[in-house]
Length: 91
Image 1 (cartoon, one colour):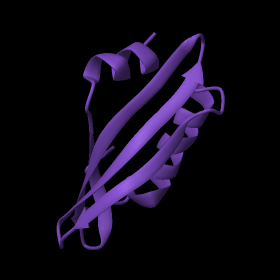
Image 2 (cartoon, rainbow, N blue to C red; image 1 turned 45 degrees about the vertical axis):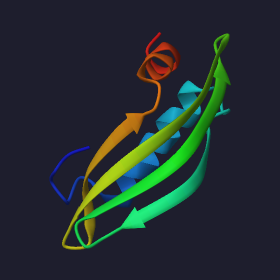
Image 3 (cartoon, rainbow, N blue to C red; image 1 turned 120 degrees about the vertical axis):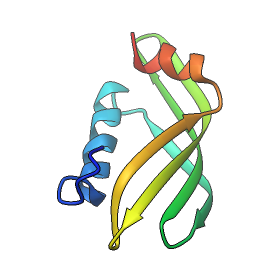
Image 4 (cartoon, rainbow, N blue to C red; image 1 turned 90 degrees about the horizontal axis):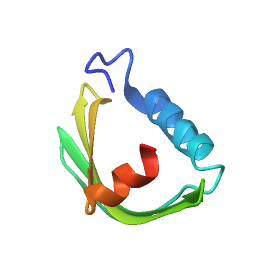
């Protein structure tokens, strides 16, 4: 995601979610378990699952957001199992 606030924000997150949905043949799910937020940063912890192309995904993910002027300007994903993450998303 770009650090330019005119490019990022919720629209960019919606685009990312749509790409995940398509890449997982419509099976991608994320169950948000915890949210932590402050003035400049927020973190969502979720359990992510999907099944597609003979592969399955079931991992916990921390997604960190940097916020500036009320806009999401950067996003970082931190899966608990990087190998499972790459095996599913990077064929």
